[in-house]
Image (cartoon, rainbow, N blue to C red; front, side, top):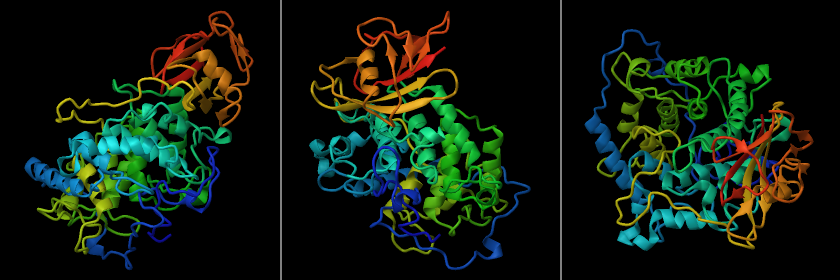
Amino acid sequence: MPRSVTSRTFGTTGATGATGATGATGTARAHGATRTSRTYRRLGVVAPAALGAFALTALPAAATSTPAQIATSKTNGVAYVKSLQAADGSYAGSGLSNEWAFSAFAAAGTAAVDVTPGGDATKNARTVYRNLLATPGWPSTTPVVTDYQRGTLNAYAAGIDPARVSASRNLIADIYGYWQTAEAGYFGPSANYNGTVFAALALGGARTQAGGQRVPQALVDKIVTRLRANQHNDGGWTYAKAEGNATELAKPGDVDMTGASMAALCVSGVPNTDPDILQAKAFLKSKLVNNSGAFNALYGINTSSNGWAVSGLNACGINPQTGDFLTPMGKTPVDFLIAQQFNPGGGFKYQPSDTAPSAYSSLDALRAVAGGGFTAAPPTPVTSGAPKWVAAGGFTAGTATKLALTVDDGTGALKVCSVALTPTGTTTTLGDVLTAASSASAPAGCVTGVVPATGTGTITSVNGKANAGSATWKVSVDGSAFAGAARDKVIGVGDTIALRYS
């Protein structure tokens, strides 16, 4: 598949509804371009042997990019990314635009609220982005799951609680709506594996404001199982589903999606000593180019692919400047990225032969050089009075919203859904959420029955599974400890609800 706008798409439109049905773009590549934006140029020839991947033997003792060089690269890179801000304060609009600026800024230690056009604080990048995400028509009339995953990763990095963008916008619930009931663990059509890898990155990487895991472990485990099942025989991954398909599993992996999949596993709690991570690490090592430190990606040497690979290593706590990633000629992937940077301008080129910076490649490179994965916790702002986080404080009575719900009956048949409801006050109750879920959840069938069906008492049965002795239904909110589930339990805006029989 050529490296084109139709093959490297992350979050384009063309799918229908929250069930994950998809059009042509739904099987496209997850790498940030929209159908009308940047085109990657495929290298026309195979790299000469001198530029091929080398088996590393005796390694130099230290990396070549010094802390000072990395600091300079970050400073200049941030300056370039700031120059991409529109006069109205925006980085994102219709389509993708430069939305990944927020994860790059956070990795480099710059708070989005501090980024303003001409010093106009009323147009700071965070506020403008939050207003966009809260718009009822965002992202489009035909969204795909990666729209919401991209929004989650960048909102989190900007200091916007993704579950509480506004009283009506809950990006975590939006993602839940694409759960594949018949193929538990996949989000969006399973043929488009990147929808699942970015579900892991978003749900695992965008933690609560206190830094905790907001989604239940049962959900994380389901996703991890699918990530592992899609790893190719060579240790890599591609954007397409490979699980259960010997032909696909035997195909070469892709540097880009290997980096993303490594990060997805690690943000889900998989240690970097896990055999699948070690196999992925070996795959990337096999693609390392001796005289530059680049990874020889599927369509040749380029900054964006290298940025994704380095971000994967960063997310797993694997130093991309030492050990396996320091070549015999003393080059590292970070060396390669910094070598693609124009200074003092700060932008990064896409291919070594390019003579001008690429905005998208610059975001990939800055995030990687700064040590980031695919998102990062927001830095503390320097703007006086600006909070680290912004979030809706309550529901708006009479305004429709969504909540994220999982129902785990202990049999392994996890139900995951986005619940649509219209609160009558600034808070609601667990009972009202479950009542709404019985008729207005996506996917449908998340809740088929609750006992008691009304009132304020303790919940004794869900979906026909009744309390029995010490085995009872319990509830957790935003990753809190599971405790007794009562219908009158208060549920607030953006709460991620997990019901579990245990």
